[in-house]
Amino acid sequence: MVNSMTGFGRGEYGDNDVHATVEIRSVNHRFREITVRIPRVYLSLEEKIKKQVEEKVARGHLDIFVKIEDHREKKRNVKLDKELLLAYDKSLREMAEMLDIELELDVACFSGFPDVLVVEEKEGDVDDVWKVVQVSLREAVEQLLEMRAREGAKLYEDLMFRRNSVCSFLEEIREREPQLSEELRIRLKNKLQQLLEEHEIDEALLANEVILFAERSSITEEVVRLASHLDQLEEILQSGEPAGRSIEFLIQEMNREINTIGSKASDRVISPLVVKVKSEIEKMREQAQNIE
Image (cartoon, rainbow, N blue to C red):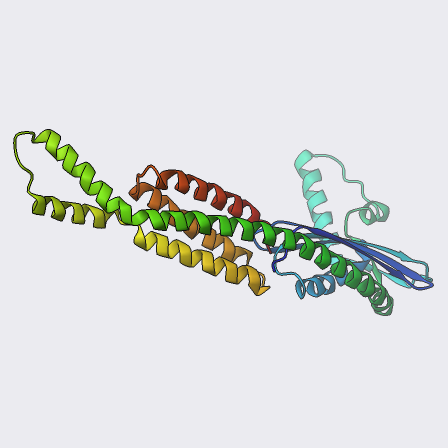
């Protein structure tokens, strides 16, 4: 089976003092991209959250929302960013000199600038919060994976249905293929007969020309490769491994083969079948973009 990249999960846990709620929303993406939105004082937990999710999710864009309620007595530190403070001071003085205006600054003014003063939780407090967040996150991830699996099951059924449809159409093309050379010989003979009404056609020469033309117009290799791609698709779908990008590549190759078949075999029977195959492949391509 395969997993979808679309899903949602929510986890909630708390003790007497700390309560955490985690929500995860996942959508399609070429790679794995994780964005964590968490209260500023707990930014140090961001990498831990990402790491725990990365162990379970291979692909997709994930937005993780973390809400923390901490009712304990706060033990916080206020950190002064000295380098940033001096940079603000230097820039403001340059600005005043450039505009030729009087510079009036005080400590209260500087303290209001972004990131000059940063409130930090003490390490022990953050560790306690992480224990609560971790439980909530684990529950949210489990729900997310369950939903992605359910959606993946639907994608699997649809892709297998379309894969089998293409196999059926391909079998009809394969059955029609041997008749192409004979019909080609007859068409060439009739056309030449019209051009050379008063002369007999050299059957041996005609046969050679038909063979050469038939070789250039043969779709055998394309049919074999397309059948091989369909077998590989089934194997990948049943592997249970994250393989969305592999499936997308296979479908791209399948589309290449059917286009070549269509250009080589301009036939009243095969041409409509080619159109049907291309339609199914396009629907498969759209679905494959949802697979992890």
